[in-house]
Length: 383
Image 1 (tube, rainbow, N blue to C red):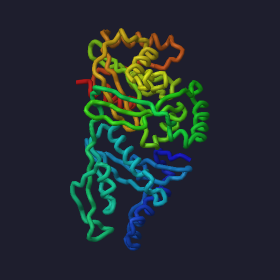
Image 2: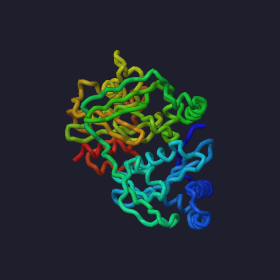
Image 3: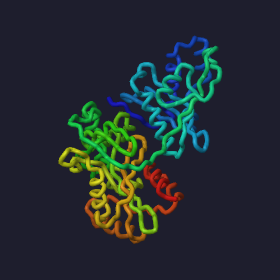
Image 4: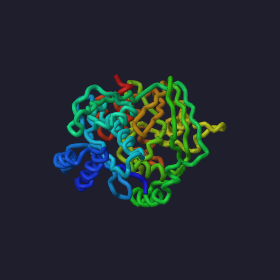
């Protein structure tokens, strides 16, 4: 069965306490020290209520967890990060740490902070943490506990060139979990009958340097993507790369779509756009992301390429999401543009958009339905 990430529930308290105790003991601490630790440290229902706790489970059984809480206006504290001994050295701790970074970005925070186990400093150092100070270890007299931080990089950058190819190899996640994916998609279609299992592409590797984005995609089914997304993106080597049409009106407002209940992202708010698919390939096998953006623009809003003026091309990193966004200036007032787009959407067969949200100031980005990358884009573009 595939690894899945999910929010903790109060019923998880005993299992998470067991993981906490066994993971700590795996460092070889003396039994008298472990007895004191077990007496003092437990995951209670109150702990679960007070922290953002994420559980990694396999076959329905928790095998690891992380616990996060805001420490200051710019810092996220990693309170807990523990992996059961039988699940260690499988990349699960690394995955949970990456998702902690994602959570920090979603909250608009720019720094992670943690107090490491006396033995775990090298693990965090390999993942970009640095030691700020130390304190004596109570579990290992004579050793020091590293107090560590990791500054997080900005989310949005300008793109000067794109070079994205398609591999002839299948997506490993889909191949490995084919039966579970099929079962999950059948259940999803019961909830959203309009779901269509077409072909799409997922990013399996990339490099962004000096304004150039190089990457490789694998073709897969929409069902595989949906399962991967809903299971917490458990394959940390893959990303959902997609295009975004960032509409900017004559007075400088941004227009984001509110997705309709007929879609897999119902109620979410973000720029018009969508997944890449095999029709977006050029004759030489490259992925035409910008072409896909204009295709989605016309399909969702009715706006053709000659009705907009392209401005900067941006990449926005949002955890397992990566948006390539084309800023498009439209010589129309925001309200007029909104009315025109909604008229088109209501007349279309798909009716993907339930509304268009006009974003005039940073305060308009506070709506929790605005997807994090869309919020980052707004903050980057608005004064």
